[in-house]
Image 1: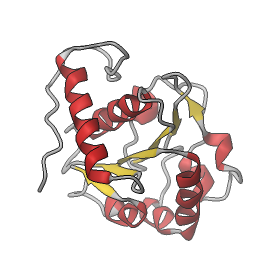
Image 2: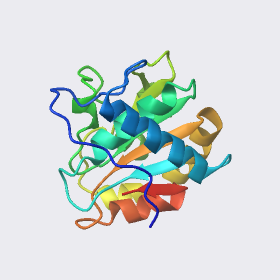
Image 3: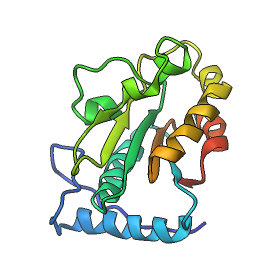
Image 4: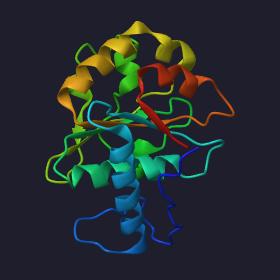
Length: 186
């Protein structure tokens, strides 16, 4: 298994650490991860799933900071919350007023995915769709063809799509999502 980078632990109170012009150890680690990922993906691959074995290993932290790092290159980046069972992305990104998310779209309660997009900064290059309400049937929602259709549309709109997914040792969700992904960061 190839190693893309090592991310050091941090003591800050925030989870979004990547910032323009910051040369801290964590920021440099994300630059290294970003560079190695871009070299690994090549030109046409753009959908990356961030996962872990169990909760609490930092997959959401890595997903959001990697997405920010890519956005600093003036790439259009979409950060997607696909951990439908224990979502943390909305909380970590301090989004308070937007409740509808991916589950609302996959369930048919929101017709246009564009209604779910939240711009979270980085020169307007970083957008997010959080997971939405916790559904009773996450694996079934993620198995729907509607996800494949959505990802095909998103590939046309964004340079990179970074997915924060569920841990792989507990549920099948990430394995289901892999059908629409080009790479995994574990």
